[in-house]
Every structure is written in C-alpha cells, then in structure tokens.
Image 1 (cartoon, rainbow, N blue to C red):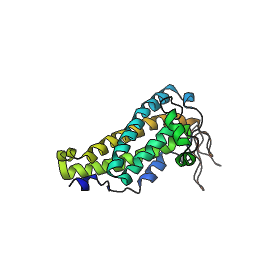
Image 2: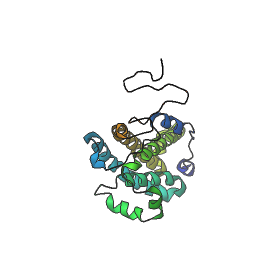
Image 3: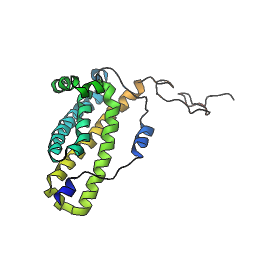
Image 4: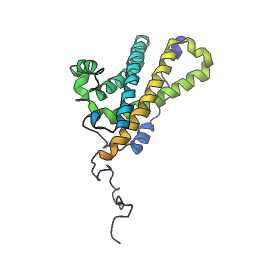
Length: 205
C-alpha cells in the first residue's frame, strides 16, 4: 500500500564509502573562495545551487510524510547551503543556519564542504536509486500514484546532479590541494616504493 511505498527502507550498501574513498583522497579538503576556482568549476557549482534548492523543497515535502527518512535529504541540503555560502541567493539561509546548532557542527562552510558534499550526495544518489528500482520493480508505473515515490524520484534527480556537478568542481580543485605526499595529495604505501611526478620509480637502484 501507500505506507509501504512511502517507507524508505531500501537496501544498504556498506562498501560504497570505501569505493568513494578509493577515488577521492581523504585528505582532499579544499579551502578558499569559490571565486578562486577555474571558470568550469564555478559554473558547475552555480548549477549545484539549483539542485540544493530542489533538495530543500523535496526534503521539506518528505518531512511531512516521514520525518526520519527525510533527514538525509535535509542534511544534504544543509551541506549544499554551507558549500555555497558565498552565493547571494544562499547567504540569507546560510546565515540563519550558521547561528544554529547545526551551523556550529559544519564550520565556516565554503570550499571546505566540497569533498563532504560530493561523498554525501553520491552515496545518497546510489541508495535512493536502489530504492526506486525496488519500488518500480514491484509496482511499475502505478508507483507514480504515491506522493512519496514522486518526491523520492525528484530527490534522486537532485542528488545525482549534485554528485556529478560537484565532482567536476572537485576535480579542478584536487591538483591545488597540498597533501602529505606532495601537491597530488598521495603518498606511497608503507614498504613500497613511490613514483615521482615524471613517472620514474623512487628508491635505490
């Protein structure tokens, strides 16, 4: 029935954080102003803004149906708001959140939220996508009769676009982030020989 479809208890994928961790360096925490980014990265984050608007809208709608299941969507919208704290259309919402208890947990915002936002939106998109597959495999097109399914679909679209667009921005930022192994933020495994930027193997020979 409607209540079973509205309950977002889809499959859980424990390996996902590991998969994202293998692709994105854990130390890739950006800082500075969005205005300092290359034009392509700024444009990508400009589009993320509309995804964050969608996340707020769908998150609030989902909250009235199931507050617990809406929590991840609202948290992602908060992350996005802090990421885009410099945007004139976001600054009022950011300032309100910044004075709250949530704001004390998220820090100053800006580019420091880029890596968490990429990870969070990516994991949410995969989990919600699996839930949609499960729902539509059971109910087919009849699932569109339920508001919870329509909200979940809209949320998934926003999460997916957020993950793709913010990842584009992060790719432009990663080369500029100093890490323990150099500008690339990587270092050789213990006991193994590293490789120089020119591709040669480090170590004696």
